[in-house]
Length: 376
Image 1 (cartoon, rainbow, N blue to C red):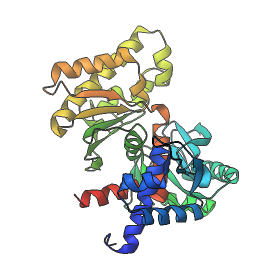
Image 2: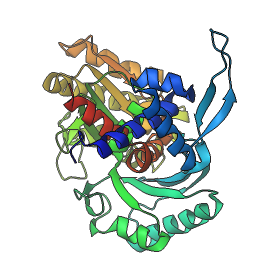
Image 3: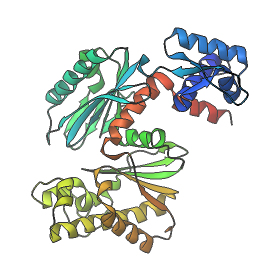
Image 4: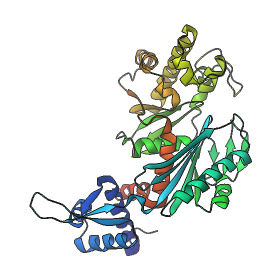
């Protein structure tokens, strides 16, 4: 598409108006034109078409500093819906959300250690169908976030090393049984997108770690994930500890949720944190220190401006995170780099899948960023 063509320019400006109303909630036509530097006739034409499409509405008049009362335009949150799915190692979560990303329905069920494709997909499809019946407006699409290597068209799970799933046409399976457009996203991609869109992370260059049942990472540069799978979880940090990959001393063997659980009778990390046991407390401190050691290496190699920790173990508690940060500061020559835990909590991947669905099927804010970058 040539963005200089009139039709393309109109579509771009339509998306800019939608994204602005998503951000500011309500604006008059004149404010929209002024903010986006559009002429008033073009703005009015776009707004009228969005009203006809049922996506925005006139919300009445409001006062201004000049005393005039322009008509406010606002996004209609329930004009359409999306579905987000987080296929996690321990739990699978599904949510129905409106155009503002508000979760209207939520369900979660345990994921077995080695789920069968048919069984897990059937459970997800059943819940999607149930939620679809509750939607009062069209559902734009479904995004399924999960670990693994995905095809370029985001339709096929090529490999999931933890479940022994290979070449699964997951999007097509869900699409065929729900009649809803479906795409796949890597769980770290979803988490990073949530960090930027929902937590409003301003730093453009940061290193993100999903510290949960497994350990994955992503380097974000100029607001985009760069490179492929970093294998950060298999960085060697210890002379002992058998990893599931078959190697000795990987970060996962020291600090991943599965490793901690195996060492303490199958208990979850949340259960371990609540148990007053000196051996458990020492192991959690060692896990935090191992993560600190790995972050020293990651920071030195990537040159990132910030480190953000997400996932269940990012919520270990301040005591354990202090061990991590202290180790990092003591051993890194980039000790001033800020290490933060994501504020989005355990639903971060799910929130990211919702945000991606809204981006891919409605707002296309990522596309706008690319276009704006080309114009610089």
